Image (cartoon, rainbow, N blue to C red; front, top):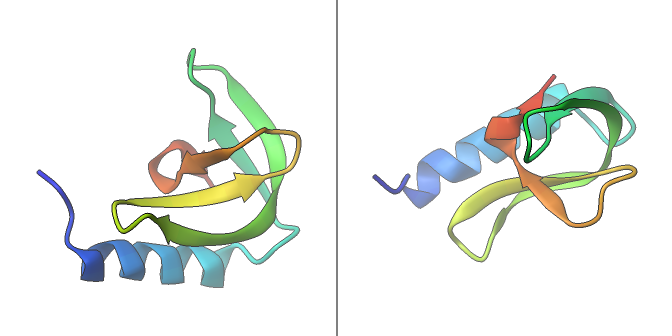
Length: 69
């Protein structure tokens, strides 16, 4: 079931409050490996459908559900 825009915005706001740019985090990559990195740009809701964040050393963005802070 798709999350509402309000829920997605709340997730983004909470993530950004806990993890400002430069914060160390772990992301679960596509094949399940854990990758230690840092927040490169603040999280946002991508195209009104997915809460994401941009991370150092990774091309593109990852959903917030895959980031451990």
